[in-house]
Amino acid sequence: MTSAPSSTAGAGAEMPALAEAVARRRNFAIISHPDAGKTTLTEKLLLYGGAIQQAGAVKAKGEQRKVTSDWMELEKQRGISITSTVLQFDYAGSTINLLDTPGHQDFSEDTYRTLAAADNAVMLEDAAKGLEPQTRKLFEVCRMRRIPIFTFINKMDRPGREPLELLDEIEQELGLACWPVNWPIGSGDRFRGVIDRRSREVVLFQRAERGRQSQEQILSVEAAADSGLVEPELLESALEELELLEGAGADLDLEQVHAGELSPVFFGSAMTNFGVRPFLDAFLELAQRPTARSSSEGPVDPLRPGFSGFVFKLQANMDPRHRDRVAFVRVCSGKFEKDMTVQHARSGRSIRLSRPQKLFGQDREVVEDAYPGDVIGLNNPGMFAIGDTLYVGPKVEYEGIPCFSPEIFAWLRNPNPSAFKSFRKGVNELREEGAVQVLYDTDPSKRDPILAAVGQLQLEVVQYRLENEYGVKTRLEPMEFSVARWVSGGWPALERVGRIFNCRTVRDSWDRPVLLFRNDWNLNQLREDHPELELSAVAPVVSGVEPIAL
View 1: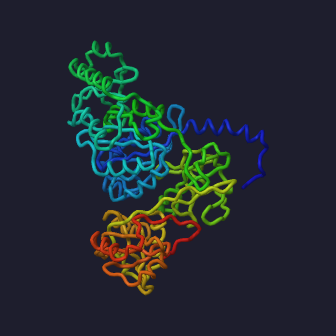
View 2: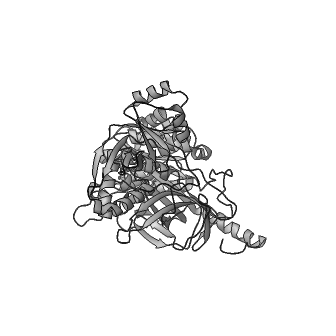
View 3: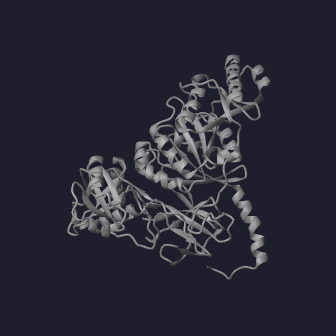
């Protein structure tokens, strides 16, 4: 710690400032299936928050701006999000931390880690397609963590399904009750605006210049009917549907919202900006503030005086010119201050945090302080790992973030022995940030690593980044395995079983045995032959141990 303990009076004086800062914070992640419009919605939220002056299209053409949240060159080329970024901005007296997650299903584990740092989630749904597979998977992660879910039904300016049908699908298939905060007037090329269900005001939208905020008019129902700006039959139909909701729907209960049992629903079009500002205003009012986090010492209140936080993401080469490595830290309690000395729970070391950074996509600036709900970037000299806890005062250690079972495996070959140093550096740094899992053969003479991933695109990204960020061309050799299981009892448990068949034994970066199987049938056969051997699809969280480097 950097100074002597303050007096009781001093500590008391700091508490109202901390409580006020926490009350201003809102923190959320956006989850969706690819192509539902997640990156576009992110850009428009930044536009309305004043963080950018003009939003870029997802697939930029000519001199048009690239999207702010997609900073990796490969993302710009493909028009998809494959990394998580953090975007902090102020709006209407609140400080918002928007955790932008990968949309592609091959990077769902990166999304899972980001959700560990989120207090709320916005579930984005395509009005034409409804619920899609990736959305369902990420919803289950939110439910497991009891994260409040806000639903934004996007692309209302295109032909789509009936709003009541979309709500029914969410309630029936996800078991999540819905409460529409606003209701659409028309759809497709006749989408005119929304009715705010609580105020009974009509918000009519007009298209604005590309990339700018849309023009809005807020009117009473009667004034909207007399304005000539909306077709009478569209307004009448929307009002009739609202009457149905009032008769059959649940009440808006914030306790249920914050427990993840009731989802406030919004309708709009991120591409045309219709409905984005009404969503942002209502979200700030209804969203959960930073809350207590589970730890080894029980729940840690954000108003706990001592700073604490955990690492949920590592990223190498956000600035390729400087070959930097950044650890993303979610602040959980107390006030973070520049140059403070913290304890690193896993190693027991003291670390002075001299250049903390406020993150905005790839852009960064030195930050003087931060509060619960904020995300800060720390220079990572190789000391931090995903799940690490940093703290001041009495020791606290937050729940670790587990690794999940990969489904694709391949040898990563380095055809150029003279580039081994760069190859090793690249593999180690990309492993640290969780781009893929790295496994090793039990035969020490086989030095090439095995890449283990959820999806093929993860492997392609590793190859791309090794070449573009580390100057190493590599070759992948696929392996005929699709299932991995960790041995719960470690090497002693495996030795007690003796010889096993129809699987391959490798070790992970923490020197734990992992069994690879060609299919589930081989896995089940081993379980029948050796019921005493406990296997896990989730890698156990480690503490106090350094990972093995290539």
